[in-house]
Image (cartoon, rainbow, N blue to C red; front, side, top):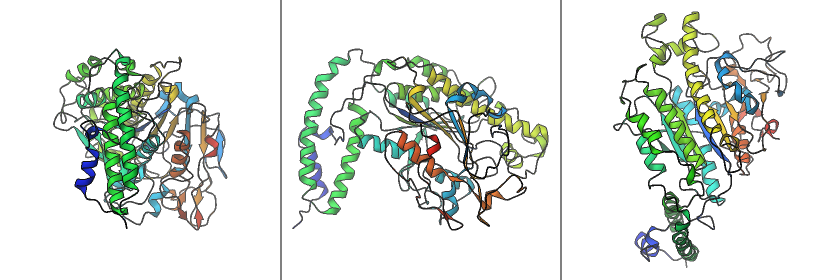
Length: 502
């Protein structure tokens, strides 16, 4: 007969000693973080992508290829020209599409929610407003933990927004720890510092070893108690205990892991002082008070600090659209009501506004965001590792967006991957995937002028990119999210993108 326990019994077991009350389950055999040069991953969201036709690399020959093709002789267009120094480290795609959205039976609350709920989950929504999960960033973080990677934080989520202040400190956004469970993004700079570095820097790391040894011994005891109890309770109680175990594991990692990279911590004043000099808050930004730009730069520095100190190996960083003052727009310009209206009117295959000045204004907005991507890459590349490489050398950077451009299109995503994952991936490539006409199953060619690709075309599902990223991080999977996308009678999922592999 299966033994039944209640919540009180479980809590009593876990709180058997004073130390035991604060010690959760830990999956790795040691609570000490790896002191080598680990591989990290940084997701950077640029929110609305880039205007169609303004970012695709220039190559010789036809744009639409009859089969998948890899180009190495390509150049960035002006929209992304600031990324030129990283061209040889970059992989960029044509016809990488959110095909999971085409087959999702649950309609989104609006077009932006459609992109946000599919962007990193690549799976059917659980409701009109919530995505399935975990998202790829959380999945990688969870799997690294299961595989024995011990860092203080399993992951870190940051959002750079011009209206962040002590009254606006976090936002639920596009990361999911489980179906329907959003992970909050931190937006207030001082809070992020306190989360990353809650204690003063201890220059004597050796002194921490005895205490850590005691924690590990106690962990071993509690682990044995969990094993004994989980084998004797009902399946219902086993689920509850497992959830409590995992929560306590997160708490342990947040307070107890010793990192061998603490010396990489930046000066607190380098983060807090620039922020304190701003007049922060809602709509207070201006050319003389550039809250958005400074916020982006500081969040990039904090993301780098989290990775460089091995506080976490997974960071999700989101840059909001720049405020109007950053790219010279005023309400009413070009007959538009506001910048949101402007984005819509100049975007898509058949834009309603083609005024060259209006187009240049939107391009300037896009470029401000990619300037922040360049700033982040430069910052990562300026931080040295113990073996003489840089943090960028050991970080896989994924630049993504919730929409391909302001037209709400989820196809032909302007996504980038920067980094070779310590030799696992090829770089310097423009990978153009075959595009299929779902009306007849034929390849879309340059001669198909006016073809409504958004509604009737299909390229490579972005699920396959996530499989490749997980594999690069040492996690063996063959599919991610919706692994059975069928369109026009064709199975679209193909697994890892082999053209990316070294």
